Amino acid sequence: FIVGGILAGFAAAAVGEAALPATSVFRGVWALPVPISLVIFGGMWLMPPSPRWLLLRAASSSARQDLEGSPVLDPGGRSAALAALSRFRRGSSPSAVEAELAAIEATLAEVSVARAGSWAEMLTSRRALLAGLGLISLQQLTGQPSVLYYQDAIFRDAGFGDFASKAGVLVGAAKLAATVCSVAAVDRFGRRPLLQAGIGMMTMALLLLAVGFQFKVPGEAPGEYVLPPGAWPPVVVFALMLYVCGYQVGFGPIAWLIISEVFPIKTRTRALSMAVTVNFGFNLLVTFLLSPLQTALDALSPGKGSSYLFAIYAALCLVSSTFVHACVPETKGKSLEQIEAMLR
Image (cartoon, rainbow, N blue to C red; front, side, top):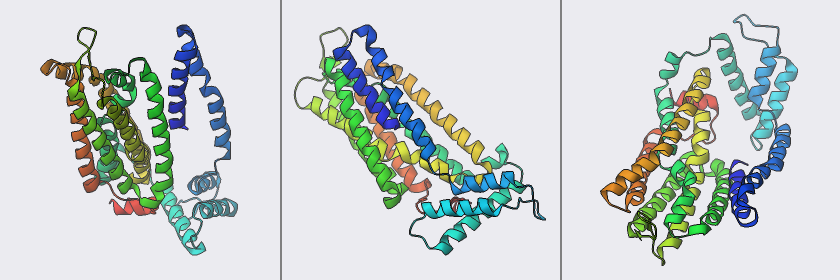
């Protein structure tokens, strides 16, 4: 729905610019999400509860405790959690499902007896923090805000002029298609292979953009540089589509999935809040630094600033690939308890 909304926004802007007065385009763009938000609202009511949440609710409503102070679960609450877990683990044997539920119960009992983890305790989970915070930082540092927020400007620099907003619709469609493929493949191929595949696609796209923008020539306006007509403008469109596809195959969904899995349960709330803060902090940093950085690079070599900028992002993609290989664990098919034990 998030990526579909992005595509719908691009499409609404393109159609609005062509069909509506300039003063009314924004109304069309903001009207389109209304029915989509209603669909999301209705879909939330159809989402099945997670077994972990059902156990937490049963524990919080229980008035009885065992000798160690852990809540004694109501049999009905446990049965509901077992049914929910069986639904998520179709194909697994009843004994395997029962064992996983028992492991979840043991973890929840440990957390309920112990106090919530402090910031100091969170910092002791070094491997989990390195994997989670590193991945969520590189998600932004590899240029995603620059490409997404400034794609119209990139298309104009490529010589597309007024067609820039319409070309953005193609990028949004590619983004949606890649997201659907990633969701379908993540539990089949695993987190690390999809991350590496996505980073590889992003690297190739950024190298194409870096090479392509080396051929910019002075435009009609003073200080303007554009790609000349010929082979490179279509290559720029292909490269942008490849970049967003790579991002949606790898960093886009997988980074958020990884941080929801690797942090210890006891300190997960604090760790997730730190990860989100770091992510949006780097998002703002990359966004606000784009224009001054490109201006500084243009001053070194007029018209070539965007080329050098894409080359920097490509180098950061290579760093990301090495980081994933060395520091990010494969969590496919593992429970939260198994992942926590693996990263101790």
